[in-house]
Image 1 (cartoon, rainbow, N blue to C red):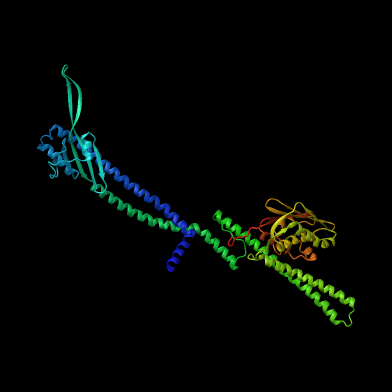
Image 2 (image 1 turned 90 degrees about the vertical axis):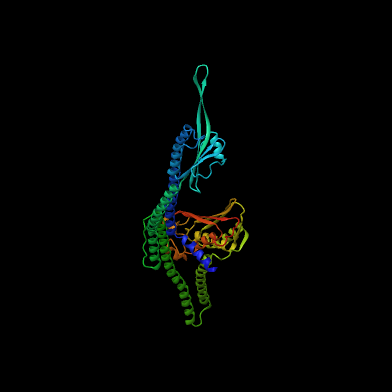
Amino acid sequence: MNAKIKGWLSGLHILRSLKVRIFIMILLVGIIPAVILRYTILQTYMNRAVNVRMTDIQNQCKILANHLINYNYLADNTSDVINAELGMLSDLYDGRVIIIDQSCRIIKDTYGISEGKTMISEEVMKCLKGESTAHYDEENYYIEITTPIVDTLVKQDPLYDEDESQETVVKGVMLTSVSADNIQTNLDILRSRATVMQMLAAILLLAIAWVVSQLLVKPFDRVTTAISEVKDGFNTEQISVPDYIETEHIISAFNDLLGRMKAVDESRQEFVSNVSHELKTPITSMKVLADSLLMQEDVPVELYKEFMVDIADEIDRENKIITDLLSLVRMDKRASDLNIESILLNDLLERLMKRLRPIAKQRNIDVLFESVREVKLEADEVKLTLALSNLIENAIKYNVEYGYVKVTCDADHQFALITVEDNGIGIPPEAQEHIFERFYRVDKSHSKDIGGNGLGLAIARNAILMHRGSVQLESEEGKGTKFFVKIPLIYIKRQEGK
């Protein structure tokens, strides 16, 4: 049973192949019209052949019916001429002719087995009323035709001895049954030839479908090969497969991804170099300070305290770098659960501003907070604090002396809206699309001076995205930057696999 299920699943997997689907589509496009055409041609031939045979027999029967009246055959069936004509009609069409009078008695049967018997049927009764019938029996392959034997009576006016009117009287019925075996034989021959031609056409169609499906899918194989070469490291340049618009779109998206990966890799390498230096510098400084203390005897308390303050600053610097790295790693773990609770955003921002104002005061930067309305939302307070803290601290760090940072708290019916605005150095247009990438720094030399490591905005963006929110920016170089944060008031947990 398991083997059958595996085979069935394997078959379904094959159907997912574009090559197989194109192959099947071409087959269906070729086979379905061919089957319909075959059926239509055979059915048309059969109908046409039967109608021609019926018309021919009906004409012969009408002529013979007139002869029956002329020879008064219904009263005397011994006429050699009529019997000969009936025999010729029966032999010509490989059939049987039965002559029935008005009383439904059979007076002549070319087979000679039913004479003197009575025949009552729907067709005979209709024919006695003057209505001829024709029927083809598809199961037994014969045609049955009833022809009325009509006598015309002329009524005369006794005063003027002139014809007054004509009256037709049905004297009997000619029931003719003829074989349609030759039609069926011809139809079988035609059907067998059509089958042979259809099989040849199907073989040709299979070959065409296979070749066409191979040709149509070949550009996608080249796409796969090119991407595999990039993946295996044999090629690092952008690839091109311009055969189809679809392949152009795929390659364009891949080349964009490749470019971003190169940029990220370059930024990562630069970041590793910078972080290595930044991690090593505090350790070196602490080592030098500690060695200086150890090398001296009877160190004054004031110098000892000064050295210890410097060591503590270096430890704080080291701790900040490590903390940012750990925060980013935690943000990358999508499985990490948020500790969602109802929080008052206004209070959270006020606490943040209070903590960051001393940092801003060192550079004479005013930190302003505008609360438009009270905003309650469902969020992880720790991660949201980290995100907003990084945005505000970033605005302070990259500001000008005597500048300002303004934080606005507002909401609509669905989202909490936070704006962080400054009049600092701004962000160049070419850097704005990369500003949220990890390890990316606009002004690397300035970032080193203020201790930036290119992780703050990446951490902020990841924390906001975990809340199903968004962050955007507007900036003009030399005039300042404004960040717009939107976070849903009601948190909706993402379902697994979505």
